[in-house]
Image (cartoon, rainbow, N blue to C red; front, side):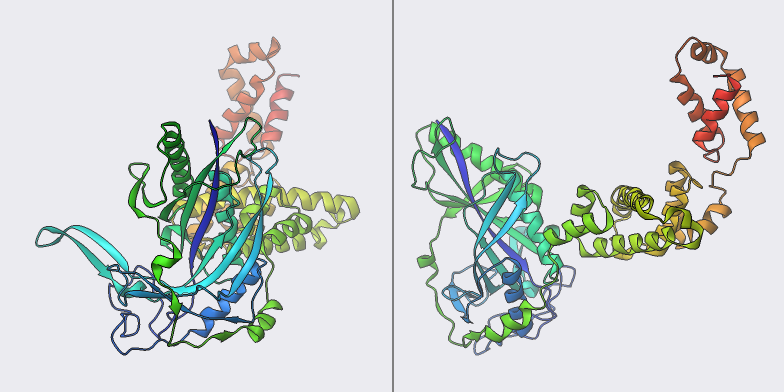
Length: 515
C-alpha cells in the first residue's frame, strides 16, 4: 500500500492593533506582568458588552485582499461555544457564516525537496475570519502548595486574531513550511502583524489525512479518509516535524489494518511525536449562533478604501529586487521576507549607486560597464548583508532596525571592500568595530590600521623572509607544485595582519621565484 498526504492548514495571526478586539485594553506581548491588561469585557464579566475594534476589521480585510480573496459586502460575528480554563466567557466571539474574506490563493515556489511537477504550486485560501484570542494557560508542576496547577494569564484574552484556513492543497511537510514562510512575509509586508511564530504571533494547526495511491501517484479513491488535527504549532520546524511524524504514524495504522479515527492531537517537541487530546469536533459541536451584541459590518467602503492602499507584496518585491538592483534570487528572497531588511538593503544599494556614478568614478559610469559594475556591487552587498551582517545580528540577538551601522556607513564599507582598500578578513573586524561604535568605516579603518596599506619595500622583505624560511616548499614549487604559492600568500597575509594585498603578494612571490 502506498499513501499520499492531504494537508490543510489553519493559521492564527495576531494583529498588531493598539488595543484588543472588543475592548480598550492594550494589546500587550507576553512580557507584560500577568493579568495587568484586563477589564470586565475581556475577562467575560456579567453585563460587559463588546465594542468592535475598527482597526482590527481593517486589518482583516487588508489580509484578505493580500491573499487574493473575495471580500463580501457584509460580515458578521458569531459565538463559538466551548468550555476551557482559558476562555472566561465560555464562548469565543468569532466569525462563522459571514467571514471577512473568502476563496483566495497564494502561489509559492518550492525549488528544493519539491515533488516532481510541484515546483510552483497554488495553495487555495478557503476563508479568512476575525476572532478574539483566548487567554494563556501556564501549567505549573509546583504551582499550588507544591501540587501541579494550571495558572491562567488573561492578558491575551481578547487579543485580535485573523484565522486563515487553506484548502487541502498541501502535499508535503516542506510545502507547508514554504507556504507558512510566504504567509509570514505577506503579513509583514502589509504590516498587520510581525507574525513571529516563536513569539506566538502566528500559530498553526495542521489537518492531515492519507489517501491511497497507485505506483504512478494517482489516487485510488476520491473519498478523503479520517483526518487528524495537530494543534498550536509555533515554529516552522515544529510544523515540518509534526507532519512527517503524522504521515508515518497514520501509514503504520493503515498497514496494521487499524485506520486512524478523526482526532485532535498535540505536538510534544521534546519527544518528537503527537499525543492524542480528544476526538475531533465538528462545527455542530461548537453550537455557533449569531453574536447578539455586535451588529453586522458593512465592508463595501472598507474594501474600496484599502484596495488602493495594498502595498507591494513579497512575490512582486522579489522580482523587483532582482530586476532593479541585480540581487541574486537567494538574496531577493531573504530581503523580501522582512520589510526592515528590504528597506535597509535598498538604501545601501541607493548609496552605492550614487558612489558609482560620482565624479571619482566617471570612468566606470558608461553603458555596459556601469551595468556590469552594478551587478558586481549587488553580489558583494548581498553576500555581506545576508551572511556577515545577518550573522553578527543573530550573535547579538538584535534585528536590522537595531543595528548600529547606518546604511550610508555600510555602503561606504562596501566601497572599501570593492576598491580593495581592505580585505575580507579585516573587513569582518571593521564591521564589528562599526557595530560597537556606530562610527564611519574609513576613520575606524585608519585608526585600527586595517587597510591594505603595506608599502612595497615591506612586502618585498616579508616575502623574502618567508621564502628563505621554507626552502623545501620553494623546491616543491620549482618542481611544479604551483598551488603552494597560495600557501605562501596565506602566510604573508597572516604575518601582515591583512595589510598586504593578496594579489600583490602573489605577484611578488612569483617575481622572487622568477616564475
